[in-house]
Length: 120
Image (tube, rainbow, N blue to C red; front, side, top):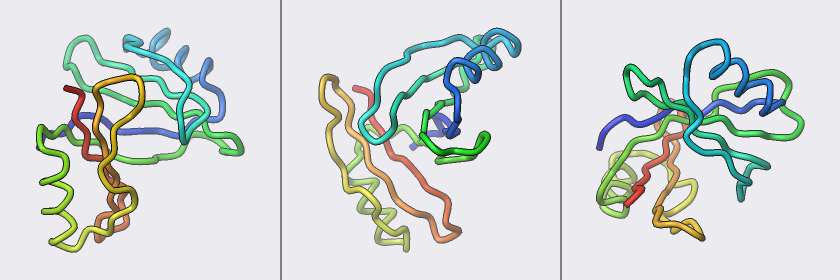
């Protein structure tokens, strides 16, 4: 697995995109309606390739950390391995509709929400 992104819950998607892209130099890779979240946007630093995922969540008061994502070309196997080492399963591996994305969520022993995802 390899680090891919950190996700932030934001109360205003337009304002967050303006902050990160308009003022901090990141690039908007995609923005779309979400399943669990009202809207999702993926940003990338053009110099380092690092990503920040923005999640529009109604009722969020200010920006909050949501999860950290790791790329995997074997989501099911990595999910099982992490679960066996004490990570608590939150959402077992599943495919996102409309794309070739397989993802899952686990809670680390320190309570950090971890996404294991494949964008094949």
